[in-house]
Structure formats: C-alpha cells, structure tokens
Image (cartoon, rainbow, N blue to C red; front, side):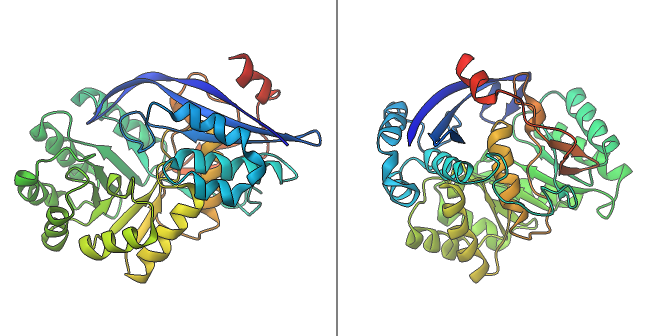
Length: 351
C-alpha cells in the first residue's frame, strides 16, 4: 500500500464571518491510499485557530502517518490521539480503499437517493442587510430550521433580526438555532440568554468560551434556552475525560464535528456517553470539501437521528469538487443523476 498526502486551499465564494473573524479561504489536506490499482481518499479538515491539532508540526505528522500506513487504521487512530483531523482522514481513507466505490462508504437509502437528511440552513455573520438576505434565501429554499451565527455584530441588531423572523414565522413554522462560538462574557451570558429566550429558540451553541466547565455548568442549570456544547468537546480525547465533562456540565445537547473530535470513533464515544445521560446530539460538518462532507453525511444517516443536522456547507467554495451531494428543500440528498468529478485525484495533485 502506498500513502501520500496533498494540501488543498478551498476558496470561499464570499468572505464568511464568525465571532473568530472573517474567512476568505480554508486549507485542508487529503490522504490518498493506493493498492492493487484501487485508491482511497480521506480529508483531514483543519480549522486554524480552533482545531486542537493546529500545531507547527502538523504536516510532519501527516508525513509520519503516510510513512507508517502499514500499521493499519486502528493502531494509527490510537497513535494520532492529539491529531483528530488526521484520525478522521485515516478512517475515511481506509473505508474508501476497502469500498467497491471509493465514495460509497456507507451504502444506505440515503446513497440510493431514497431518503434525504434534514439539515439546518446556516446564516453567516455579516451586516444586518446581508444576514436578512441570507435568511430570506434560506426560507425560499425550503429550510424549516435556521442556524444563525451571533456574537460579532451589535447584540441589539442581532436580537432585532431574531425578532423580525419571529414576527413572520412561529416556532412551529421555523426552528431557530443560534451559535455564539463562545462570544459572550460569563458575566453577561445569563442576561443575554434571558433576552434571547423571548424568541422561542431551539438552542444556543457555546454561549461562553470553552474551558470554563463550572461557569458553563451554572449556565446549563439555570438557562432559559437549551445549551449545546460545541467547542467544549475539542481536545477532550479520553473516555474518562468525556464522561467527567458531560457529568459536570450536564448540557441539553452536544454537537459532533468528526474532524475536530477524533473522527467517527471519537464521535461514537461521545454519543454513547451522552445517551447514557439523556443528552441529545446532532452532527455538524466543519467546512470540509465535498469529500469530507460526503463521508460525514453517509455516516450520519446510519445513526438514525431525526434532528436537523449541520451538513449543508458544500456550496461555500469556488473550487469544491463536483459530487452527488445536493441541497434541496432544506435537506441534503445524494442525487444519483450526478457523479463525482472525473479525475478527482489528479485534479487534487495538479492544484
């Protein structure tokens, strides 16, 4: 078996904003396996400034992984505990190599285009006009669940946006989620949650920065809005640490981003621990290309979770890869009349 990796820069169609700043591009890495004239591909999706494996020796660890690919998926996963995005890339690459079709990792009714996955429509941060534009577009596209990034523009303007949605659409018509990306100060968080509660929100993701479990526990025990942990899960790798975190904070939800928390195996550990404690969950992609999104979507379908998932990011980039993944009427579909980009491996290497 031969293993190589390649860096690839994804270019946003429009600069996209979170509370951590504006993104114009995103770098990602692909692990490519070749054996007996077959290939497998996996995406190592890293988010600069957020991924725990955003470290100077990242590419050195990718080289080490390719050099030691003979160790196999399980031993490599254990050796890469501090590099969750590479763990995930390795998982995908082996699944891809061992499948009849390198992009058909989990055959199901989803991949047969019989059952779509309900997803939320993501509203990026920006000025008030831009956010209104996005909201209107998502509603016209048939989304019944919207997720708004908040915490970057004036809080009064953000609440006015939410109020304008609720003036038109009830909680039964549109489910609203908000994601603060840790933007609230602990001292002001409860007041802001109280203000937000008047808009019948489904949940708020990560109201305060990760790493303050006692303060987050207090919020979760008193909040008027269900709280979902997101960044809080990053860097928590061992099962006992995961158990302790959820036992301490007791959130209503956790959000699983395989690229950031150890791939499918790491995510399944979180799911098992959460379900033992009656904590609900959903899966979200982390701005991967269609290659990583494809793997996450196919796996997510097998989990039989009926909540809207966060899997609609494939259309953000100018230079994404043509694939059967299609967003339609607020769902993600695997359209069999569409095919993967021909010569995809070559196009990655030429880039």
